[in-house]
Length: 409
Image (cartoon, rainbow, N blue to C red; front, top):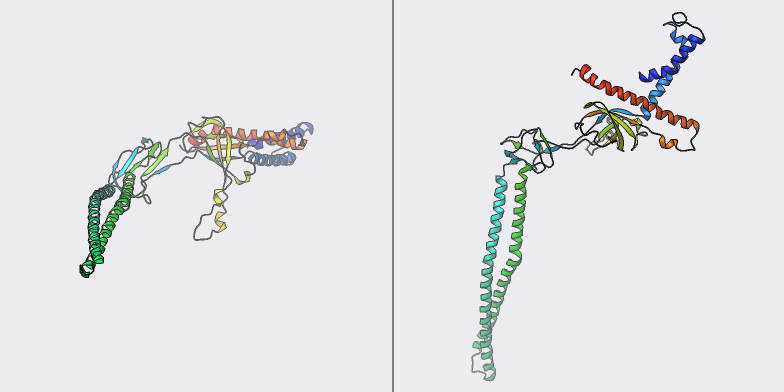
């Protein structure tokens, strides 16, 4: 309506004034309700053409959207494993800090596993003490075997020497028995040394490896035990938290609640039509008016334009995607931030707004090479942005009335 009114001031009104005061045609005589189209046909036709052109120019070069929202993230409160709730520490809508306990699951199984791992470590440490005693015993057997071997060698050498000096003085069988005794003692010494090496290997390799494995099992059990205590990952407010002792919580089926992190609104996420993809650029100046901030216009700036459209995404499935399923066009996602810090601090998270973005040709107009017609067109595009700014202010003025009176609230 505003565009039609402005265009009629430049077309229909001059046409009427010309016919009324120049041609002398009179209202109610030559210009009547039935003859108005014929009499003012040029003005009406030009008005309609100019109105459509103006609306197209305004909405293309100065796009607008009602899909502007201060989006926020939520954190799902859930344990890493399912279990039965043993104790709760918070209530619904309670403010919590990062690291504050929320609830605890039954930890009897994890505590038993941790205690088993501790007992295993104690058992291995006891084995290490016993292995030290066994090592001392093995050292004694080695010393004993060496002594017996030396004695057997001396006996064999003595008898063999006598036999060599005086053949027949000692029976050949006694010399052979002495030689076998030496070999027997050598085998006994080798067995004692092997037994000692086995004990040393057990002390230096096997038992430490078993202890390290038991300690790793203990750490794993302690980690599982810590997982039974669910804490807040960030500062925020607990929502939809209705757990009570005895409830079963399953991260795949039933979360425990939702944590809404506390933060101030620093920007808006707006969705503009795809036809404005060539117009919307980072750095564009914009304005928003929000339902939660009635009768206020907040200057904004476009900080980022998403280069993909969500409606075209394809997920890997076992079925081919029919392109007809993607017929509905998506929107260009734009991030808008306040031109001046702190202007959206009091806007609730998730608040809905109406957003405008304005094309500025100031830099293009500084180019001395552009022609007069081109310069006039750029000036006209910048000038018609005023119409969209007026429309936004009218919307901001009427928004509370539409919501409270005509909206039935």
